[in-house]
Length: 164
Ligand SMILES: [Zn+2]
Image (tube, rainbow, N blue to C red; front, side, top):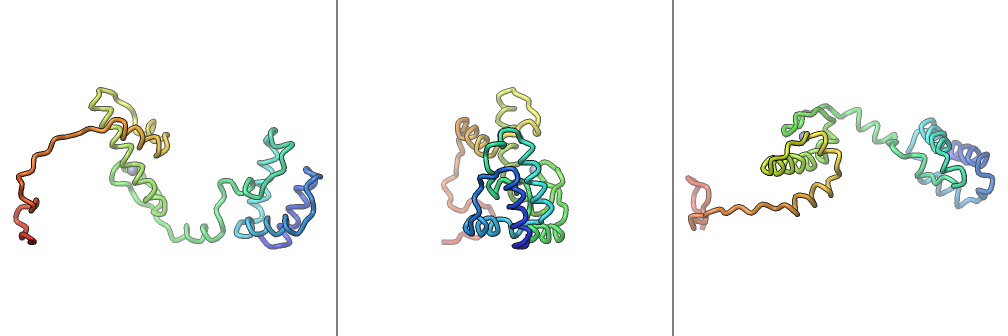
């Protein structure tokens, strides 16, 4: 958004929230937050904000209007993105989403396995609705300790040269 667009947006906000004061600080802060975003999308963000009845008495923060939006810069990056299949769950996604998906996917798979051992069958999609913290907590509370026997040899990998 340009400075003028942010100025006009603030005027729009003032139509609904007349007690929003006119100050350079407010204007500058709104500009700082919104400058990276697209003018139409932010204005649509205001429309959405106004549609929610509980917001009638609450002046919006600039952050309220960019909920779910991506910056123009991020859009540019997405143009260079490509589709990739997760090798754990075989879902298709953007490469840029893959890292965060993968770390969660690993945990979902671990929980699935754990539940299956306990005789519970649950769908992947059902579990993936939980956030990663909840999944981690579940895993920590249900740690499985397995006894492993080592042969006392530091060199675990057979056929590899002994290092020291
Ligand atoms: Zn996956």
